[in-house]
Structures are given as structure tokens and as C-alpha cells.
Amino acid sequence: MLGITTIAGFISLEKIKTGGDVIRSAEAIYAADSGVECYFYKIIKDPQIDCNLSLSNGSTVSVATSTDGVYEVIKSVGKSGKVSRAFGVFLEQQQP
Image (tube, rainbow, N blue to C red; front, side, top):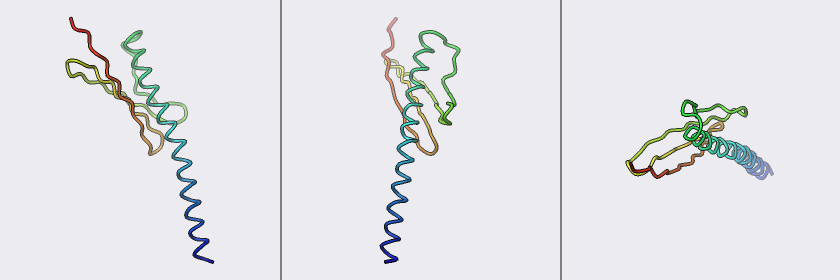
């Protein structure tokens, strides 16, 4: 009986952890999306804006860019707790 109770408790605990990770995962995805949207705003409207953000729900966004001569690569990483999610966007650079 003790073994069954222990196993049931362990399974319940794992489900609770997974449920919390799903919420943090969604928060991290929305944070990463916010970083991409912020960078698009930066390109179009305000080149001075900083897209590395701390959001009101405690999640954070880190945006980095690079270029390979053909594409400008935007990498936006959202973090919530220990969960990270990222989006990458490739923008074709205009040739002079």
C-alpha cells in the first residue's frame, strides 16, 4: 500500500511540474514574439528603441541581430523562469 501511494504521489507531482512548465513556456513564447515585434517597430519607426525587455509578468526578452551579407537574422529569446523559447527571422537585405 505504501508503494502505491508513493508512486501515485510522484506521478501527481510530475503532472503539477509539467503544468507549471506549460504556463512558463507560453509566457516565454509570447515574450519572444514581443521581441520580434519590437525589432520590426525599431526598423520602421524608431531606431533608438531597446528591444531587450523585462515584461510585467516577470518574463524577459533578449534580441540579437546578425548579417551574412544576404540576410539580416533576428533572434529573439523569451525567458520565463527556467524556460526559454526563441524565434528567428530572416530578412532579405536590399541590394544597393
